[in-house]
Length: 163
Image (cartoon, rainbow, N blue to C red; front, side, top):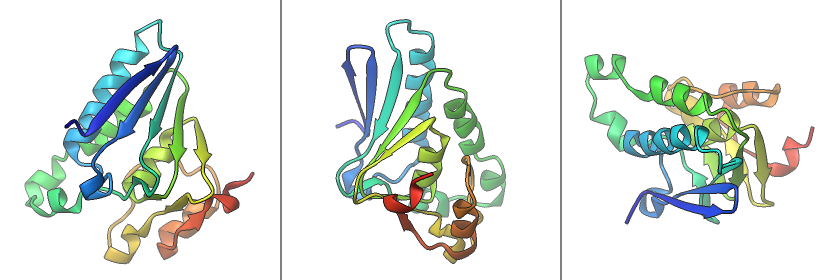
């Protein structure tokens, strides 16, 4: 079974994060798949928009900490994640995050990279890595609240995201 399910609905390309056993934690392999699919979609004239979604309980619970824990200092300093985030961020067509459940850490950052976030009633956003002594890695922080998330690690619900 693939960690990324890809479906077409007319001009809409839907990417579904599919690591339920890991709460859709974003490992390098999954981020690479997302980047590769988006790069192909960017040059495909039949794709007009891309939607990234998770499942009912988790959009993405964050980075795969098990994968990160295995790295020594040189491997950490040469991490491919910044390049993967840049490749995802370079997607030139509308990118929508359809968020239900938790979007934490790297999952929140993935949602923030999107042009639009459609949040379900049970959506919860946060950057809890600060509670582990880890600086949030990547993503757009378009409002003041993500700065509060970085300082406290406390998640917020979709109702606070109305601007």
